[in-house]
Length: 290
Image 1: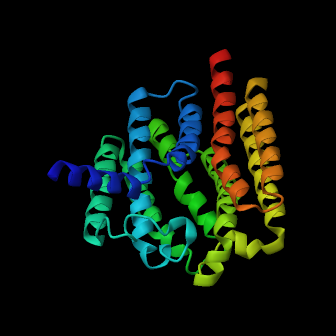
Image 2: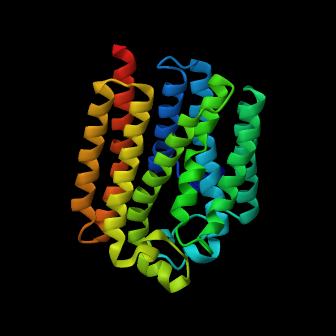
């Protein structure tokens, strides 16, 4: 009986941290890996890579817990989130706070193995993760803030390897912001009706009937900025082939979301893993052949 209760509690914690839905980890991981590859010129220190990979899992998990704490009064009113552990009282708010703080402290302990600049940047990362859930109350496009929060590992990666943050890091961060607007608007299109009822803001609501157009423009700007990165760093054709593949995936997303069907919009959101992987594959191919 006791064993069964422990298993149920661990399962609730897993779902609270969204470890059963790894797409968020992947969307956070890909831009981190892009930055590590570029900063390390294809050969980043594997200890640094391991620290960032582990930190990505920990901070994404902590962010999900923080998000559910902030949204606990709303999640029960949204079809997609009404069965989350906090809503169903499988986990108490006290437990959730302890879990979020614990995950954040472990992540911070890992970062403390790196240089001073990266440690300072990690404090900003934690503040971004903690504040993002509340931006849905007052920002018309909270997805842009998410792009900063999800992309803050980019300047951190450069600082960890180089000891400074070159201008190219900020271009890469801008690319990530527009990518986040694209994929999280697809996600927000699923919840638009519920968000309107409860007064939550999102890009899907702000863009209105131009939502599909806005998503595709965001993909286009993302790809344009990634081309700028390629030109700036004199990357080879292999990198651009990765961008061509990513462009194909973005085009596929248009056909998924154009009718605004919830299941297809959510499928497009999930499919962004392949967009991020394509850019990573292009970068990896360039450095392997260099």
